[in-house]
Amino acid sequence: MARSIRFYRTPGSPGKAEVLGAEMLDAYNEIVNHYHSSKAKETLGRFQIIDKELAGFNPFMCVNLQKVLPENKGLITRKDLETALSFNPEFFLDDYIDFGVALKSNRDPNYKQNDLIARTLAEQLKSRGISLDRGKLIPFSVLDPPENEDSFYGLVFGLVDLSSNEIKERVMDLDAFKWNYRRKKGISCAYLGEGFVWCYSDEDLSFFDSDTRVVVVSAEGASLKK
Image (cartoon, rainbow, N blue to C red; front, side):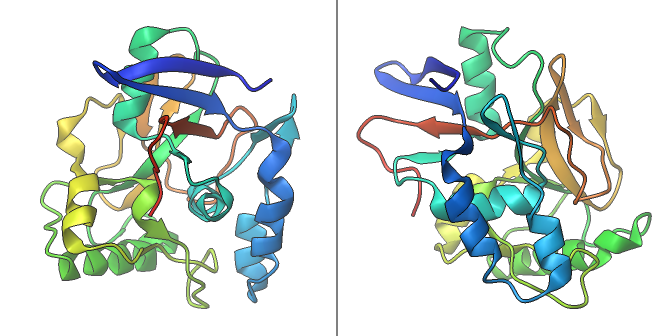
């Protein structure tokens, strides 16, 4: 049985957060096989199975994984993660949980491998009328990882086909949350580290740790995907 925790987003609105097992891996790998670039396949093909749970992944993999999740499940957001922890602070104590991408600036001068990624995503946000300001927290639910031969990872981040208003509702200011470690510029994965440390400090978007776990949220009677 999957590790899970029940919580209430608002009174009368129950939700359940659970650690994803290996049941989606075959379907996920089938999607990865449709990519042409060897660099893209290398970036996306790093899932491990530890204690029957999906582990060892990066944000590109999280974004791609959404394509095979059931309609009533979505990858956890920062807000839902905070809420779930308020119901059971010890539940994710030893795990790393990715919940989005942090875009601090439209260039990444200190880590050139990310410069194209930051520019591409900043331009797409701008085209949807979203100003970068002091930085944005972008949930996985609005992202897609198209191939790009010029990218160090073989991939970039693009916005999915949702209305501008729906994108704006989900993208949030980085300053709206407390962080323990952060980057001053560029783009990075946003995650909860072991011991409840909130971070967007790692430059390498292909980095993965065996303690990382995929956490999905479901709400009875509600679809979390478009």
